[in-house]
Amino acid sequence: MSDPDFVDVVGDGFLLRGLQTCCADDGRAYDHEQLWLVRPCASDEGPMLPRFDATRWLKAKRLPVEERTGKELSVSEQWHKTHIKP
Image 1 (tube, helix red, strand yellow):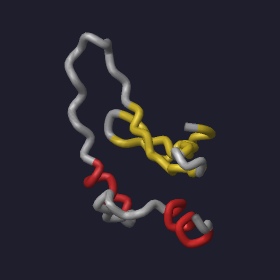
Image 2: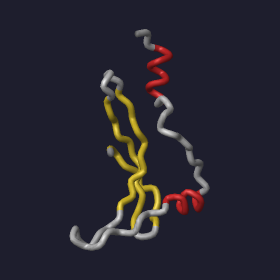
Image 3: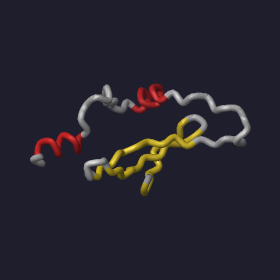
Image 4: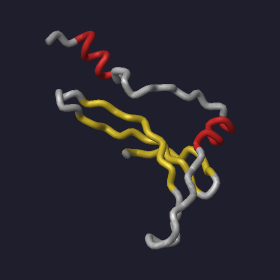
């Protein structure tokens, strides 16, 4: 993640938002905007931290949630399909 922004303090951690640039096999480069949950852990051998319930945070902040099935074309794939002739 490059140049992360501090977003919020949530329970036992905090959220960072930033961009991650990736490259597809066909040469397209695209950015993913990501939220990263950062939480301290006493040690690597200690017990697992409890799962973070993002739905509670999203409801509290009244943020829109994009429902996706994972089968949709990405924005860059849609653009590539529309503008680049094979």
